Length: 355
Image 1: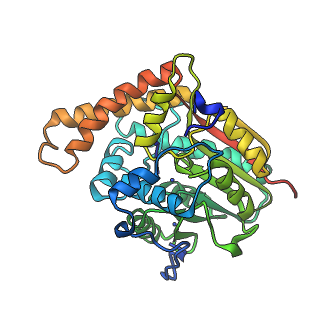
Image 2: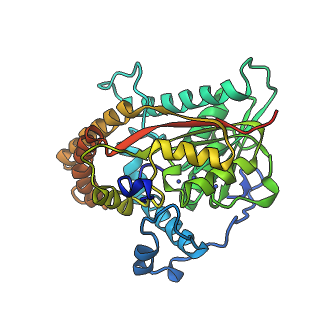
């Protein structure tokens, strides 16, 4: 899931699987599915509003918020849009790290997105496998989307396996189909559910938690980070890359609130606040690596791609057309918002205490 609260410190400044191993193909739901009939659009709009981190949160409100996230990503035209604009026709729909990438070359955005996945994995391995001697690494991808990162990481290193947990069933089907086609059935498992409430028997199960452009949708960052800690073995890693709330001097609370409300962000925290939340959740040596210049370039190139798509006329009768028009305007604004300090983007890194 890609980019998309406002706490007291945020008065100013105030997600991706089927509990189903791909091979056995038997599904287990992590939480009872919240059907749209239970949450009409008016209820979703009311329940999914950004809230203060200190405000009480009910399970019903969280489910409504999560259904909004599904609506944002899992329709056929939205998935096609993200693949075309962010993945250059590939399935890697993440923001990119642009070191050494020719922005004019075909497939540049997909290469940068994969570059970010590689950069994040390097940070993870520096925590759990510095000398490369580990015989196997089993990690969990929180909010794995269509599973492009998991497929890349598991394909490039035979000792790596992934559990993917993601809200969106259509994305999860894509993930399983790709894993099967790539011969990764035994290495990638896919669970439909929420990383806010994972199975009770997953205590200390994974070597680490990896999440790329998905945790921004966490209903409560601290609660989500505490749940991630629970499923990580002692000494395991946390590498979380995402959009964060900025703290520019001329940024209004109203502007931040509007972005959060329209992009399914329920707990809109600054990088410093996320570090505090991670430490409160129990993560050791939690720190933030600021990569904001990379997201500025990502927004610029996404905007250019959308403008070119509209100019081509190819999408004039497509269901994707309204989305393209909306995003063209939004992406131009995003670049100026980065410059004004509305957003930060980067990685939250930490480890679980113990050996």
